[in-house]
Length: 169
Image (cartoon, rainbow, N blue to C red; front, side, top):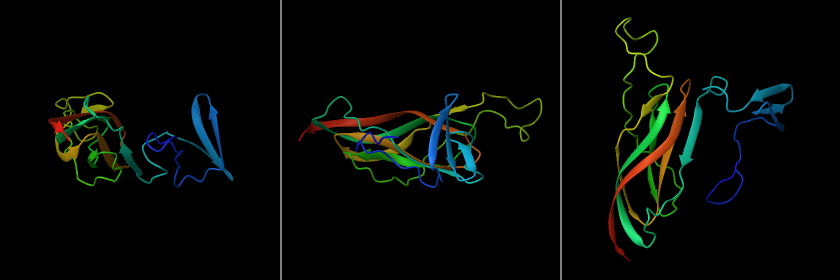
């Protein structure tokens, strides 16, 4: 994978891979006496999957104008209610945000916990899009998320920002 900000290739930490191969459009990796399929499942051999994601910086249609961001809405699909941390980075700062974000509670019943004939069964992936407070003043903004999930599917598909325009500085 390539980092879109630095244009540098990234590393896969913790994967004991000596070789990589694509077979039937699926990615596999191998080491001595072991072959694993990448990007398959909701855990890493029983261990939580750690993520640290930063979307592309955006000038919000006014590159020379300062803005103040006030709210952030990550939109994602999930099979559970994961703990999600993050926020909005300003002017190409790539540091990790550690504020806990609000996550909507699922509207659907969970198998083996919902009341039979009363629970509403939903889709495999539940849409979540709760608004969270954000702060920052600058020209370019990038939403960021950090998670640790085990047994939960999580797909970040979009983000919305609320901001106020300032003057040219």
